[in-house]
Picture 1 (tube, helix red, strand yellow):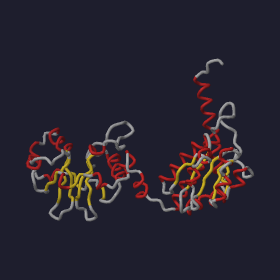
Picture 2 (cartoon, helix red, strand yellow):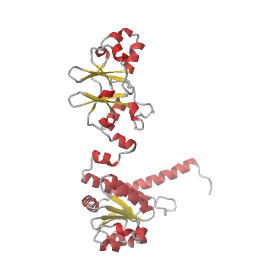
Picture 3 (cartoon, helix red, strand yellow):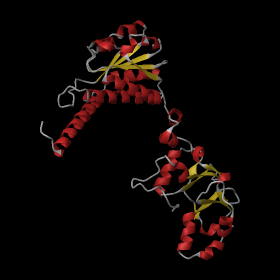
Picture 4 (cartoon, one colour):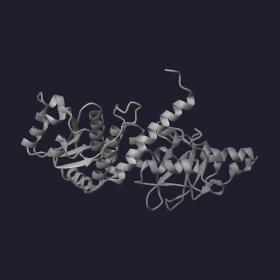
Length: 339
């Protein structure tokens, strides 16, 4: 075979993507009452959703089982071949089986169907043909449609598995909506990594008030910065009024600007005269991802956290958010002071 040019390679890749995208779009247009029935079965399942499939469909099934479990529907994957050698023992009467097979005739899948029915377990089939062996055994069939595979030979599972994956995701996510799955539920299942970090409450990531720099409005800038630092450095001073409410913020950037403009005399003025008034704040109890969005949008390095009465209870410092996506598209960390 002659070596393909980059143009030809790009055209081939685009054709495959367009073919798969068109198949998913067609699947969306042909959803019917069967999808609703399947989603409600998932929602009402009191046991576990046991997902099965062989080969590439099995790999799709593993992913859907993981998506179900992470969005509020207890689920695990059952390998159909292993099922015939003892793993059928995982099935309980209150379970629900979700089976993937484009043809509906995969031997390893069809062999376990009588055992599923004997146990009185409901079955959802994601397959092309309702009149297939799998389709006839199912309580409900979510059809993928008769699809041509996107690979040049028209044989490798590609379009069919893409549609299966999309339908499985759709079923799992609609079921999560029916369950009233919330941000708190999602956070409880995703405590690790940057995603888990973003789903925390701000008070889980903020520096508590006793570890922050604070001052009253009538203290001079010089006296505030002459005081010993808290146990960890922060580039912001929260200015707190006699009422206990946050009145303003003064940052290292503000201090640098005084020197830059040769306003050295301001060091002996009340910090309340040179602070940023009404700074951007995060509300206690809000999500860290909301605070991160404020940091990004306003290009800030520090964000006070206040309660409902406007009293400060801590500070979000961008330094503490290493590993969380707080950078802009240009790669620069959010910096600056409230405008």
